[in-house]
Image 1: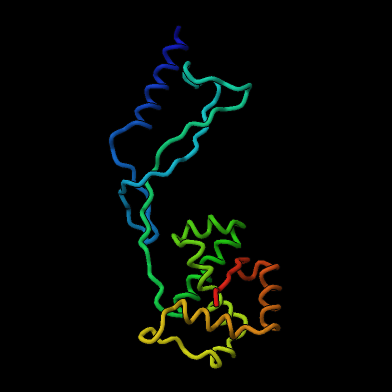
Image 2: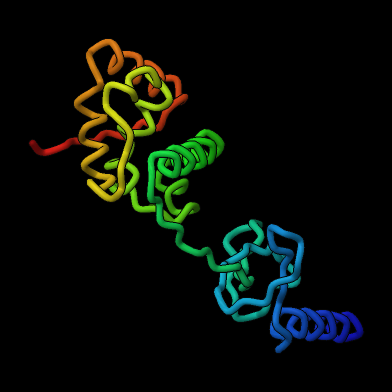
Length: 183
């Protein structure tokens, strides 16, 4: 019965840690502490003897218990020019190379896949054939939309440039994303 009392104390202590009313905080990117209302699930392993009586055990595998953590919300940043498109593309590319999962990379950066796909020709032209930018011309936000400039960049990609782009995509040096423009 002494052992049962110890287990009950441990369980009560663990419950007080998990279900405390104090807000959780985490260190943000700039180093300051943040308190947020957004939640993220975290896995916590519990050994078989510590599992509560109402939780079933599958063999000798430890059970996974979910605990909520706070996560800082991301602000949306609108891209307004070709330099912004290139910067966003490079950030997503680095995340994709690390994770090997495009949808997760888009989710982390808070960008829709179709948004990136529609502006990809701009980034590919700037990365693979920067000499063709003079042929396309500079982007003027007062005269055209960014999507129209992306269409112009797409038409400027010739067969040789497209083959170089495809080779870089196969080696994961560019995002393996496809795009189609209606004419």
